[in-house]
Length: 348
Image 1 (cartoon, rainbow, N blue to C red):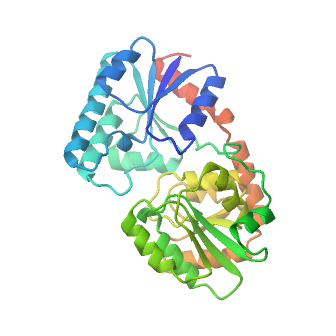
Image 2: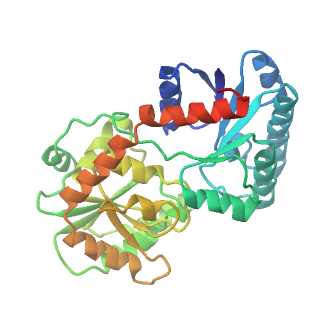
Image 3: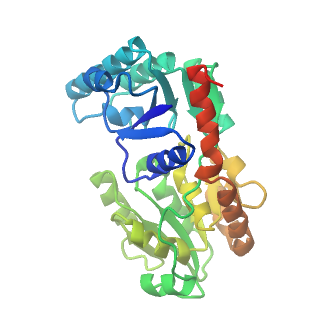
C-alpha cells in the first residue's frame, strides 16, 4: 500500500507525524505540497491513495484570478486521479477555511472534493455532523481523534526554569494563549475578559506571530502599557515552545469558530489543561476534569471561566490532560488510518 499525503503545511508537524506512524505500520508513505494532472501522472502506478489535508492552502492566493487558476489545477489533478484509479481520502481540519477571502470559491472547492473523495476523515463526532449539515456528506466518514504531540517538541525545562526565562514570578497564576494571532481566535475577547478579573497575582501571556498586521496593531493597542499582559507577538520556534507551555498554569483558547484545535492537543501534550468554549470538539476534550468549558453565547462566559480556573487543581487537571495525550499517540491511531485506506482499496 502506497499513500501520498498532499499538504502545504510544514510548521504544524501533523502530516509528518502521521507519515512516520504509517511507515511504522508498513505503509509506503510520501508527501507532496501540490496537486496537478502532471503530478498525478508521475505517481501513476506507484501510488494507491491520495490523502489530502487543508485543501484551501493548495489554491489560496492574493487575487481571485490566481486562486481560480490554482484551484483549476487542483481539481484537474483530482479528476485525473479518479480516471487513473487512485483513491482519494480527505481529512477535514476545518469545515470552512478561516478568514475566507473568496467564500464562493471555497464552497466550490469543498463541494467538489467532498463529492469525489472515497473517504472523509474527521476528528470528532461534531465535525461529522457539520459535514452532514453543510455539505450533505453522509457516507464513508471516519472518525479518528487528533493524535497528540507528545515527544514532537523539546520538553526538558522545569516550571521554574521556564518562568525565569520569561520573567514570570513563581507565585503568579499564568494564563497562556499560544499560536498564530488571528481574528477567529477571539484574542481581543480574552484581553477584555482578563482585564475584568478581580485584582490578584495573575498574568496573561499572548505568544505567537500575528497573521494580519492590522489585527496586530489592534492587539498592540489593547495590551500597551498593561504590565499584567505579556505580549510576545512573534513566531514561537520549536525550541522555545516548552518555555511558554511549562511556565503557564492553564491554556486559554477563546475561539469564535473552530472545527479541530491542534492548540488544545498541544496543551494536553505538555500536561496543561484548557479553558475553551463549549463548541465543536472542545466539550469532549475538557470532560473528565481536563479543563473548563464556557458558554460562548454568554457575555461573561469567558471571564467566569478564567475566574473558575483560579480555583481549579491545575496539577491534577494537567495530569489528566497528559494521560489523554499519551493514550492518543500516533502509533496508537495509525492502524485506524490503515483501515481507512484498506477500506477504500477494497482490501482486507
